[in-house]
Length: 267
Image 1 (cartoon, rainbow, N blue to C red):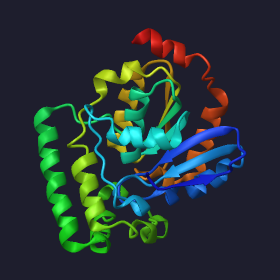
Image 2: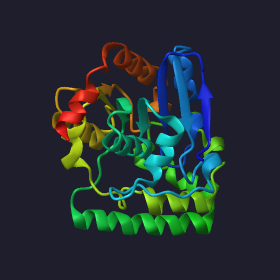
Image 3: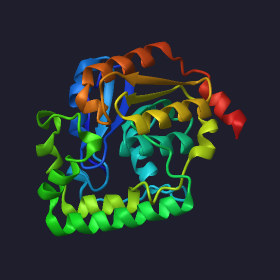
Image 4: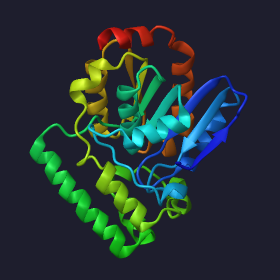
């Protein structure tokens, strides 16, 4: 079973938080604290990360492996994912529309549509996986966090010590089995999402903001896109206050009582 941590067991808003690549479930603690005791939250360590480093599971359209591990652990709830975690939550919402009450996608993508681009990304992910195994987690994190994608993230906010709890093998397997190059694109299925959907991106993260605009338009009127000013890709780390406020507002304003019937009608 995947490692997880529970917060506020008496809260009435059941929520599941899923982290990004190289992170673990502890990254969500500040946001869960900001949301308060009404949120009965579970944060998960994904396969290959943190206390789930020894677990392997894939994230492909033809396999229920990872999604079923998460649903077995979490069940019916609102699902909130960042980056890699956003892709995981998106898969869960499409496979289990009656159990994902609401969906929050932060700095996420439905995948790479072009076959050749996806194949090239898969090769890059495989090379990067070998690189992690060769140099170790600490050295890899020095390179990973130096990318322009994280230029707005101060060193004090990187959660480097938590990231170093993962193993080289775990992170390498995560790239091979759950990387964007391995995942088949989900763009053509986005219209099937019937639950309320919130898409959050940082204004300085132009690539994922453009993706967010397109995702919201493709999903339809049950989706909204929130752009956090002066923020890059790592929204949960750069602006936990703004993300918590956006999640809380979304949870308070979106009813979920009718989405199950709509999902069943679309099948």
